[in-house]
Image: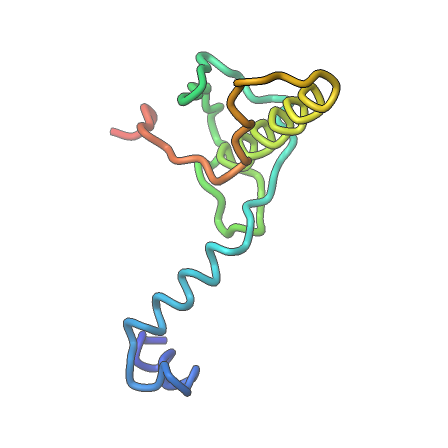
Length: 118
């Protein structure tokens, strides 16, 4: 469907406003959390507070087909980040640490570069 058709199908305040309808759908899709896959096969090459460098195995998709379907490198990274955040929150609940940074939430990772593309 075209954006105009989608806007008309949504009706209401979106009728005749294809850009507003597209923005509404994009925001709705982003509200669905990414599926977290088991990171047991994730090969971490580098990690610090801001960056995570990983090895992408052949034939594994870099990004998921849909947010609710796993089986991609991104989904493994989401699983890894969730496990790490959970472990950090468990550690902090056992020993109170003053002045430390709160653990980051497991949000969707952003790819900076893919070496498998030419």
